[in-house]
Length: 347
Image (cartoon, rainbow, N blue to C red):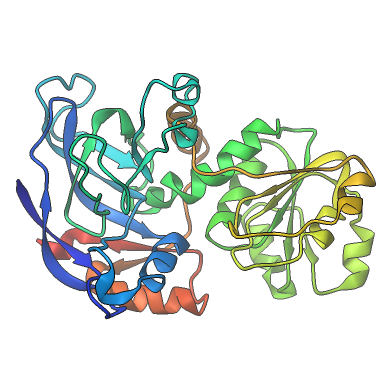
C-alpha cells in the first residue's frame, strides 16, 4: 500500500481533518497522480453533510482534480512520469455494456466506479477522493491536460464543465441556437462560457438582477430576472435550450415556460425528486431531459475545446488547510464561482 495525506470525515464530526490515507499499489494499468488542485463541488458538501456520524465509513471528498503523473503501471503506454493530467468523478466502469462500448461510461449499466464513495471493481474497497496529495487511477480515466489551460482553473471542468458540456452537445447547441442558462453558479457560469463559445445566443436566467453585469462579462447577451414576472412573461417560448443548473429544489414550471416549441429543458443542477405538470410540456411539445457527468470521449473533447477557446472556471484558490472554510462558505453560497484547493500544503 502507498501512504499519502488528505482531508477526511470520520465519526460524528462534520468538519474534515488532516490524516494519513492509504492508496493501493499500482496495478498494471494504473497511474499514480500527485494531486495539485481539486475543486470543491456541491456534491462534496452533500456527502459531508449527509453522513450519519460514527456509523459511516471513512469519507474523503474531491472528484475534479488536476495533477502530475508520478508513477505508471507496467502496461501503461499513454502516459509518462511528469505528464500533466486531469481526472473527474468517474474512475472506472465495466467496459463491456452497451453504454461503455458507446463511450458513455457515465451511464455504465453496472454503475460506474466513482472517485469517492464508490466501490473498487477489483478488491471491493471504498474509493477515497482527491482532497489528498495522491490519487491512484486507472489510466483510461485520466485525461491529458492540454497546454494552455491553467491547472487550478481547469480542475472544475472535470465535473461542472462536463456536466453542462454533454447536454449542450447532445442538444446540438450552435450558432443558430437560443440558449438560456438558469442559475449562475459553478455549473451555470461554465454553461454560459461554453454556450457562447459554441456560437449560441446565450441568456442568463437568475433571481438576482444584479448579476447582469457578470453575465455580460461571461459572454451572455442578457439576463432575465426570474423574480420579475414581466421579464419572465416577455421571455415565454423564447429559448431552444434551457440548461437548468439551479442546485436547490425548485418548480420547473416557470423554466419550461421559457422553452420554445419543440425545445428542451435540461435539468442538471438539482438531482432530487421533481414534479412536472404535463400541461407545461404539452403546450409547445416541450421536452424535459437531464444529464450527469460525461463519458471518456466527451470529456476529452471538452478539454480540447476549452483549451482552444480559452475556457476555464472562475475560481477562488485556497490552501487545502482551509477546506472547512470553503465548505462553510459553500453552504451559504458565498463563492464566485468555484472553490479550488491547492493541495501542496499536504507535503
